Image (cartoon, rainbow, N blue to C red):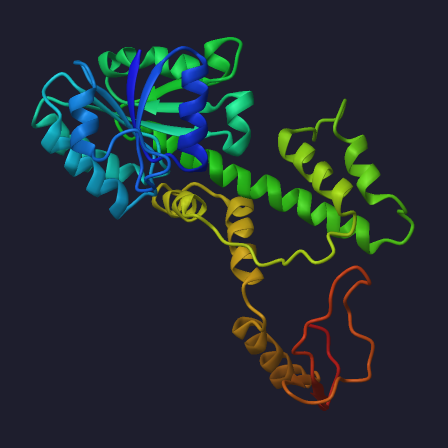
Amino acid sequence: MQLGMIGLGKMGGNMKTRLERAGHEVVGFDLDPELRDVESIAELCETLRAPRVVWVMVPHGRPTRMNIEMLADHLEAGDLVIEGGNSPYQDDLAHDQLLSEKGIGYVDCGVSGGIWGLENGYGLMCGGREEHVGLAMPIFDALRPEGPREEGFVHAGEVGAGHYAKMVHNGIEYGLMAAYAEGYELLMAKDIVKDVPGAFKAWSRGTVVRSWLLDLLVDALEKNPGLEGVSGYTTDSGEGRWTVQEAIENAVPMPVISAALFSRFTSRQENSPAMQAVAALRGGFGGHEVMQLGQEPWDRPTQVHQAAEQQHTRGKATPGAADNDA
């Protein structure tokens, strides 16, 4: 099958390679002249045979919208656009409306697998009309992992359903990563455990917590057992936020994923204004000692376990009148 691919970065480039290995013809366009096969989207559309199928694999938001709009100008009725980035599902509804007015099909496809997908295959979650998903099925079958189709591919529902399923997938991923990370910190904090990397590796087969994420953590710990030099600063790409927002809109309790998202926000703060307020409140109602920034370290032992790095803004305490628990 012939396919146009827009966006040949880490994901798109590997997907193109996997498809070509499976015998498909992929015509690629990218802003990087070293990566592209054609010089423009217009040329890409002219090169493809009808019915033309074009996969868009660029960052969500404005880059995706611009490419969809250009394709709307160059494709014709009966052609198909697959949007494989991590767009919010609301964007899919707008893209579908724009393209359907010209008779162009639209499928949104959430893609999971990262840089390992080239060899292992990609988990695919699609949304769209049956005839459009069916048209692209040879592409989906080449990209998904080997084995039963239903174990690596789902036509999740109507337009938007694929990206919605991928959004929830990534929200779950936030929670799983946070749970492994918290377990790692507790094992590091207890001096009775001498081989923390070994404990994680022992979980990788035969236990109920085994997973690919666990395998990746085992690999990281084998290379750097104490994670020395690794910054705790953690970004988020949007899906976790959208998952929590959807949970609020639908009154679905989601404490684990919400906490995992908020912990990423905490990782970016050298000194948390919220915890400054907590410290001030404790000093106000209970007379607890309040640390001051920019002063000499307080000589009382801090309540941080030995595996954690001390907060760099730790300062001197202002004595209070009492020491009530809170």
